[in-house]
View 1 (cartoon, one colour):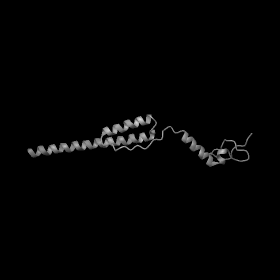
View 2 (cartoon, rainbow, N blue to C red):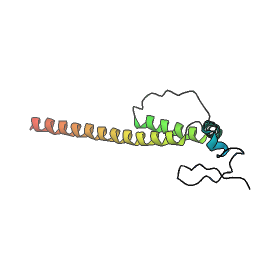
View 3 (spheres, one colour):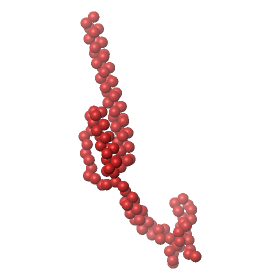
View 4 (cartoon, rainbow, N blue to C red):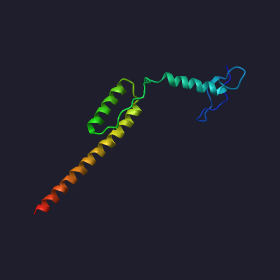
Length: 124
């Protein structure tokens, strides 16, 4: 039976891998750079999104613009051109922007009503 690796895992448990013959460590604990390289390769292979050119969009000026940006983001997520995390951030920002648009509209309506009241008061 082969010897066990004498290293400890990040959680502090004993490594359960077999030690490389002539050493006290398994292949990964004996060569941490190799382990990091294998992790990078695995991570790159696990990417499910296409690298695309950065897209420059103009800031949405209206709720209709926000709707169009979100519509495109949905299509890009489905086409795996946009990562879901980026779409989540975009959705959150869009919601706040729509609330700001609504608040601005209410403020304009209130100012218009105040102006009407002043005009009627001046005529009386």
